[in-house]
Length: 317
Image (cartoon, rainbow, N blue to C red; front, top):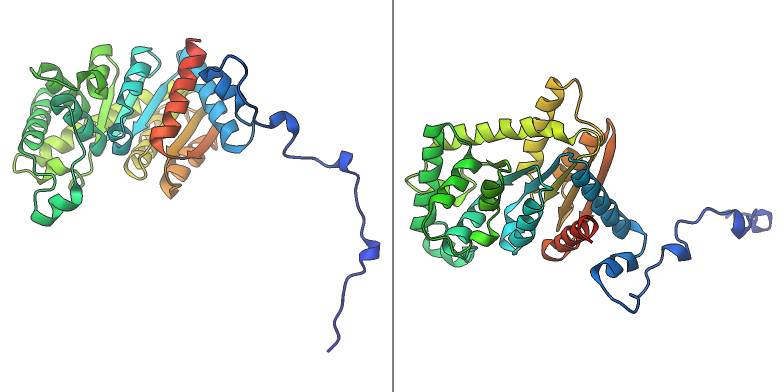
């Protein structure tokens, strides 16, 4: 057997000064100065990878808000139940959000927090004895609100928000995204997945009402997307399947009617894991015609407050 080895004496080297480097001292993190603040903390982050991406999203959303471009939030249930409602409400009050679209789980958690002051049951214990999702008040009130919304020609989100606004007792009203949208006249839509939500287990659930109100909300989301053109932002927070799929179809309608617009917007996904649909349907495909796509992974209860505080810091230093 004959073995061969390369002649290392013939290797060519290059000078360090001629090499392009991805990491330089100027981009490193640094400790806060003598007057620590949240702004100082953000400035102290390294200008590398996810920290750079986070700054990009913060800057873009703040600029979109200043320029009155669309800022559209796609919400999954986990974002609500880990306690981020107050920060979402602050963004709404600040007038920087133009549309909030929720999946069914987000709407249920928000409704329960507003109406009863608590949410998020123990699934395992409830599943064992068949009581998971069977709370009478949640099913009865939300399904009644959806049925009434269908009769009135309202959307699902609009109907739930109106039901909460008319409710006598609202111990969690200050943290409710539905109520904040109602107070500040911000479109809020809910995108149901039949059979995937606990209120569909109840005898009071009406498929026709759920379908008609959620379909209207889908069309309303499509109607809001043109505001993204040239500088807007769509942020997917914690929905791995439903909201990315809904967004892609709504964007198709908007571009079909808008001659290929909207384009040139920021599309960012924030979740605990990297999933196929958010990456492809939110971050990559919608920005191929122009725009910026970013995916940042981390715990919602830590990552999203950094983003939300950062935007407010730029808007209201």
